Length: 195
Image (cartoon, rainbow, N blue to C red):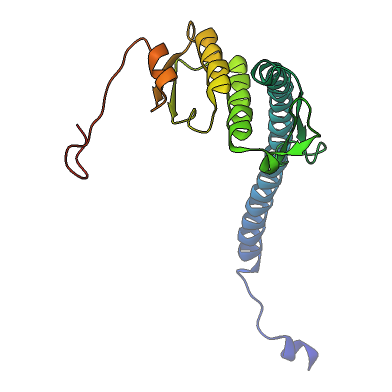
């Protein structure tokens, strides 16, 4: 009775077993290849992350030193520093700009006057140019918030860098225009049409 319940003997069982075994081996091999690829990718990502951190920190340290140096020239004293908000994770960290113009306490960038903000931004820009120079720099009304003394400091800085960088400065400031090698004027005879 038990033998009858088992049913007929499957004569193709061995072939089916071999076919399924072959398919299983193929899938196991593919799974092993995928796991190895995932591990290789993780190692590559870790290596790239470490290299990116090393390069970023190298550039950050140079930019920090240059920013401090240029800030001292522009403000003729004071202190400036760049800090990482999360030093343990520099690639996703915010960069804090801390400055103390001469005779003032250390301030957040938002607490500075418009002229001090402009000079601080220029100090950072030129600090970065010292790390990675660019063939030209376009500036639009950066001297607008500056008083005459600060415009002179800005123009001296531009003159120091002009041997390596060509500056295109859009300005209405008379002193800036006087220092330019070439002047191009733009007028608007009719609204919305520059000439």
